[in-house]
Amino acid sequence: MSTIGPERVSPSEQQMHKSTVGSQPALVAKSQSNDEHRLLLEMLLAHEAEVRRITRLQDLYLLIANEARNLTGARQIFVFRNKNVMRMTAISGLPKLDRNAALIGELEGLLVGQDMAELHEQRSFFLPSHLFPNLLWQPLLAPDGALIGGVLLASERGWDEHACALASELGASYAHGMHALLLGQRLSHRFSWFSGKRGRLIAAAAVLCLLVLAFPMRMSVLAPMEIGAQNPFIVAAPIEGVIEDVLVQPGDKVEKGAPLVKMGGVELRNKLRLAQEQVQVAEARLKKANQLAFSDAEENGRTELRMAMANLNLKQSELRYARDLFDRSEVRAERGGVVILSDRQALLGKPVVTGERIMQIADPEETELVIHVPVRDALVLEPGARVKAFLDSNPFSSREAKILYADYQALPDASNQLSFRVVAAFLDQNGKMPRLGVRGTAQIYGGRTVLGIYLFRRPLTALRQWVGL
Image 1 (cartoon, rainbow, N blue to C red):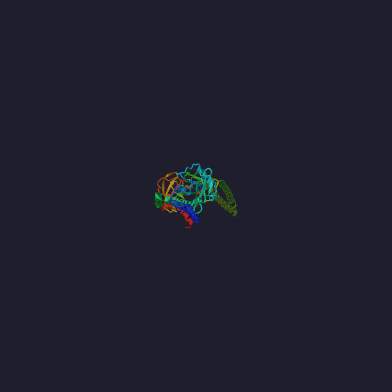
Image 2: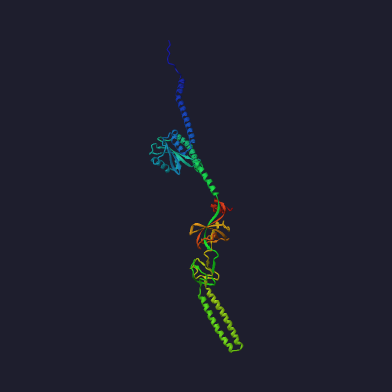
């Protein structure tokens, strides 16, 4: 009778069995690790695809703050945008930021006080005051290397190399999306004025402006003007001398023969008195020579008589000349009218030569327009052109006139600017004529043009001179 005992296994079989049984957990762990990596990769790809589908910056901020926690294992995420300084834009778990929160101010101040180059290199740091004190900084860089934002991940545990590498991968995707959205936002902001209803309104306004600028009108210019005398009488100095007194005031009405100016008469009066005395002496010599001629029948007496008579005639001529000069020292009006004189005091004591103008006398009913057109506006100065005169004394009404002639040479006016002197005549000569010396503004009309050229003629002229066309 045999007894069946336990089966004996050789040592080699036992070793093989142990190795087979012990390797099963390792294979299972390796299989689980591959599944986790595959799942993490799928989540990462899906997350990056979702980032690419984002069309608004705020949506991207919220996606980073909330969805990145599943990938990185962070307990809280803060998203920042670089606007000269780092400004927080989103916090995980919160749909909207409270700018008055102490945590936001603390983290923004922390980033402002940090050296960014050192922070990018160090990446992780410790903040004891925070609930999750282990912080990981992930900068968001544009393709040109500019810092456009950043992501701050907070956790209660430290950050290893695997987490830092994953954060860098995510940061590259976030930076690409943020840069694209920022660029699109700038472009859309630039062209937002030309899109939609606003764009249609702008286009309509542009067309309306073009139509208005193409509106036909007459070219015209504005220039200062004054009422001047037509065919005034010039009162000139009859002799050379010094004006002693002016006997009239500007604007006085004088009759023909009225005294106007008195020249320096002391010298002329002395010459007249001397001439009178010389005539008296010559008459006495003639009387004496006449008596001598009767008593002396010789030739000497008759010769002396002839010389005395010739000397008397000469002295009488000098007396007549001296009396004529003395009479002409008082200038009188040769016609009636209104005295045109700028400054009476300026004439007193003024030396003048023969023929120099002193004043004018004009008929108040014979007036004309004297217009001073600046050189830059001298484009409508054709004879016969229409003029509308606005007097300063009556600015709400105008009078029609037409250009008679214009000077060909520009001269400095009262304001020391080069201008052409233009003379125009009123068309209505039967109405009451404005007073001499009244000033105002004249509008001179030229040929037809469009409103655009009328408004921009000076800039266009300056541009043409600048470019040399």
